Image (cartoon, rainbow, N blue to C red; front, top):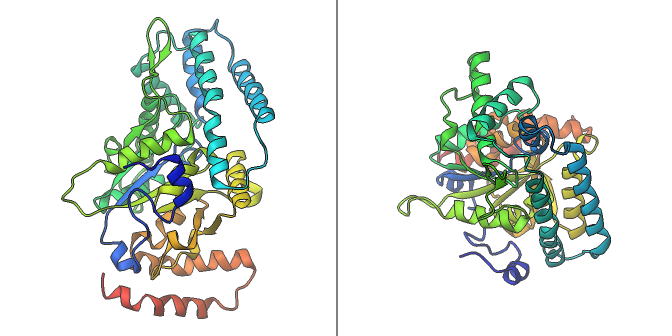
Length: 373
């Protein structure tokens, strides 16, 4: 059952709809499949795809306003919202309420798009073709290693879903397919499952109906952080009851992902170093800092005793490769990549002399777990 907003604020993430903590040892953690939920824009991709989707419609209906005018209208609307809303948010409940107040701004944005009829005459076939071309031409750039992460989860009999406030689930599916086709065309890679079937990824996003009116499906719009949590709850609740309970992992990059990150058992913020962060990543980091929510580098994750829920912190990763190299995917995988992860960690702290000692401690701490794999 999904928690009410008051319950969410009171219980925070020490108690959530699915479980209250991770298994104490990674050997136990690995015995459960993973349910991986991903954001799309800014997480699976490096930039937002909304301008590209708008341009698909604008190509069919060139008399409609340009994307620049549409985006500027949204910026103006959002600026008015910021001026009218309270600015000092020091508690989680205040932050969640503030995020939900943005719903009106997002509704107006959808209404503004529909009023232009820019999506008049658009079809799924047109969207798929444009998405494939965008990936091939590099206009939509997928983040490195996404296919390895998805492949690892599916190999472990887990499931993968995408939850996005983007305008077109069809566009997302086509981007995934085009990205896989592009990698296959470049040749086999031992780290990539070239047989990965992206059709098994459950994509939840908004839907463009097109037609003469150029409408979007408003029956189940995904606009805010609370909407994304609603969809994630539905995704996690799906599956066969006779299978072992899965470990819920969410990966996102913006404040729209905050509620999903809070309610997943493993919340991972995709973020670069300070000088390479996107605007959305910086905003999420500022929010976590302001609320006193710690976020540690995933390379520091302990394979023996990962108690995320009890330590009130998230993890951050620079890319999907770092997630793949984490203890989430088995003690052997972790040992294989421990030296690489520790070297990166030490480079960031400018301390190299203790590498062998740290590696020794890692191997010793995993002795019990190695008997389980």
